[in-house]
Image (cartoon, rainbow, N blue to C red; front, side):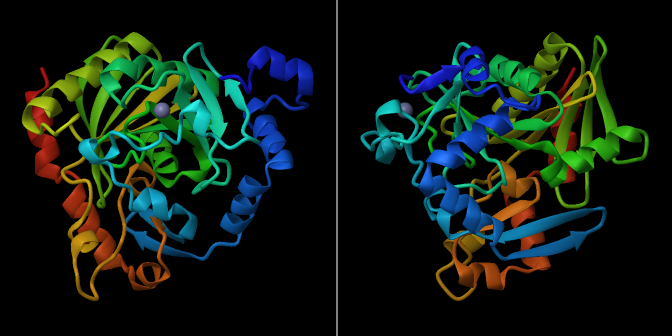
Length: 333
Ligand SMILES: [Zn+2]
């Protein structure tokens, strides 16, 4: 990317005071980019509702700036000829990139859901495909350390630009599911994590939190995490194939020396309320952030309508049941 800086160049040019490169990069973009600054300002003042469930919570956020993402057309035929939002020629002129790795450039997301919301984009226009960029996710997570997390939206379950490979990133402590996972890990034998397999020093668990069922992998060696991930992925591909890729949302973060990977297998991209044509219609299109506890509603009428029961219903429809998860876990050798 022409308008981008390597980490070394960035440090030299701006000498960020604290040891938080991403914050310095974010602040720099806020200084010179009115459009993004206004959207972050609006997010700060956005209306929210908090729903408490057993041991977890979901924050509903009214966020009209996300209308494009929620309503995004991701059909492969229809997106073939549209302009790609992540390709260099279509970025905002104020946008600067930070070269995170050899292949990935960090951008500030101008349509935020998180207080600091980044996109790590692949430098080449290639479709979203986790089997080809899982190692990048590990490498990016290693650079982030404990403070930031990275997420992946599969092309058939939440990525609004599935045609261009990318991850999103934000502050780990702001994301409900991460705080929850850290608590679970302090007490792995507490009944919510079921050990499925170990590999080297790494462990694969089936996790339930009474709202969603997911896999959790923990380990300090990238090769072990990788192997356990592909064990799960292979079974998901066989049992739950989808057009481009089995439907998964991923969250990765560091916890001490460990990498933690959360795998949310999905059954559907959108819940039935999205398609309803009467007053029960709710335009919500759950991707990793929604699934992890930050649900975005771009239309006020939907935000007003959402309640606990509907959230439960949405999660039931788009996610795996406990028995779905068990069926996959049972096939992992
Ligand atoms: Zn592109």
